[in-house]
Amino acid sequence: MHYLNNRWVKREDLVISAFDLSITRGFGVFDFLRTYHANPFCLKDHIKRFNNSLKILGMKPVKSDQEITNIVLQGIKKNAFKETNIKIIQTGGLSDDGMTPNGTYSFLAMFTPATIYPKKYYQKGVKVITWPMGRIYTAAKSLNYMAGVMALSQAKKQGAVEALYIDNKYIYECVTSNFYAVIKGKIITGRQNILLGVTRKVVLSLTKKLGIKMVERTLLKKEISSFDEAFLSASNKEVMPVVQIDEKRIGNGQPGPITKKIMRVFKTLTKNY
Image (cartoon, rainbow, N blue to C red):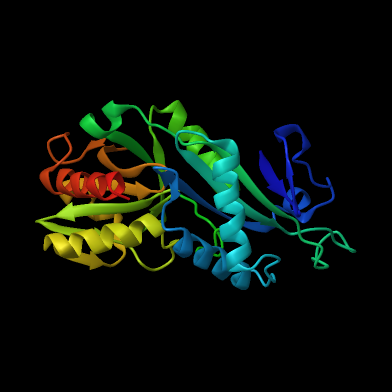
């Protein structure tokens, strides 16, 4: 069961107008999270980011924090998956001129079984590719994923799990993940011109507890050759090691000790969540 504009509907009835700006212009906001033991992970943080995205795009929220919380908890119970992926969406709604919103937004909450990636991704690490493009309004989690769709389609063709947004000089973030490099025992991750992930916030907290040095700055493309380790974080990927960027092997081509330590404590955290 899914939620659409004040009612619960089956998948086939989860429909909105073809004239909605989310369809005609890719305008709208979403957020994504998952459960552990049927509990939504960091729900308050996801709702906070959702509201911030709405603010950046100049949209008024149609649901309060408590209403969204209640919808999420009800949806988890109604679907009764072992673990659940949850996507909350506020569309751009209808438009009188086909371009600007008139405030008739739609609110959706979608519930699907949680994504389970192959164990080998975590045991052996994954490949990512670089992609010379990025998202607009990076601080907002908007529905406009044209760059991401193109990037991940190419990544899939090259046997990669993710695509890393870059420009002529800098490394930013992946399509659906935050990115981290380990150089000489320090974890380095971007802060400017990226979407600050909720799982990223958890990772930063864990590194602090572990006493691992974390530096928030924009990585340079030319630094790739000096990466000892690299990894991703995201709600659906958790903490995932990266052992190859394009054709460049990272470190010894295996998940490194710092990455493994963070993976281990993150797994412990979610096991007890």
